[in-house]
Image (cartoon, rainbow over all chains, first blue to last red; front, side, top):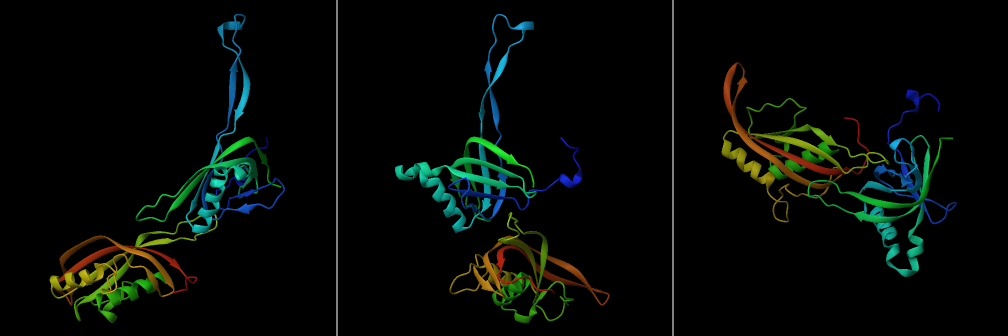
Length: 151
Length: 147
């Protein structure tokens, strides 16, 4: 790993999230995003402790990865909310359930790309009396997330 | 643009017309009363997203009403803070377009009064002042112009 220099540092402004029906298809950007939280992934463990485990220590081997969830907040606008709501409702009908899982791409301001498959599991719209609505939705990631460094 | 919109709204609601002034002007608040002076307060929220500052924006204003008698200032304040509807041009809950600015809502957060001494030509004069604070949610319909 190369030494970190300040020129590598970024702020989150100008990131974007897009989705597509297919990996190489046309990606649709969701406008007005504020925060995008990539998943807290976790590698599970399987215990292999036995009577021959040395030094009075338990033993483990790696198990499966939990891919986690992605949360996205965005400034409310009817077209944006409708787009997410459409994704959220795909699993409600038998004929579109398979289409609920999309290919997602999050592009960081430095052009790093996080790509994953997933489906929308939550879509909310809080309406506070004295504030501009800020919506949030959640994507359940399915399978591995890949990172591609800046070109 | 938002300052111009507030100016217009306050002139209409207060029925004071040209006696409404922004605080960036030098205003004599002793003679020719009643007068109304408005100031933009710190705390404007521009609300950024990844696509830029596309709002809606939020701005805070203070409105100072100077009058010969406190009751007169209170009456003007009541006109301004009354609900916006078809029969009364109050600003509470106002929604509409003015001065190339779409106003989502106006609401009042605070009001109080004072009868303070003001020095005029070396003499102390007592001038009643009624103070209102308001918040406006808005969206500029044209890019802001240089002052």
